[in-house]
Image (cartoon, rainbow over all chains, first blue to last red; front, top):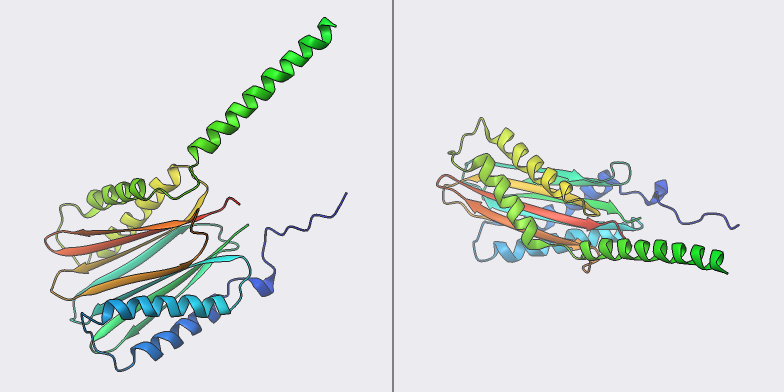
Length: 119
Length: 136
């Protein structure tokens, strides 16, 4: 009989590492949003661009066999209340997420990247 | 002889029953994410929690938690082979703009997402559901 070689758990070096992903997200937000103002024409395009950029950067981290979901929310800073939450139904051993917030005087941005292991 | 034919017949019936069970399982599991069903589930959960209330800063935490947890619970109860990520953002209505975008790296034949935008007189609520399949 052959040895079982199909792994259903990632090796440590291939796990989704939240700290590394958070650093990547922070770098993208800083680069795209520093000195930007909230412009209702430009922001939808900017939001999409940031989401795609973060996804590309996380893919480059090469976490093996992980499916990725990246969500970015950008809103105008007017001092009103905003609250965002997330819950996940997944395998807490293999799956993880990273998040970051960026704020300046004109806008705020929340970005979250989730990684789900594919068995 | 008759003995062999009898046992062959029983095996044949068991195989047919097993094949029928497999067919039912495959028919129930469409293989693609059902956006409409998820939309309805989420809308119902939002209406249940913040349907008739005004924005209240001290209650917003428990409302959001309730919306997300109830949505997740209903999705899981459907019994489909998915991992779920549910996010919810609630904002006071004051004329400011809010935009969301998402980018996903997955298998688009089995995985999917749906976003529900809901508003009342005093607030906006945006709930996103991402479903990641765990079947090969």
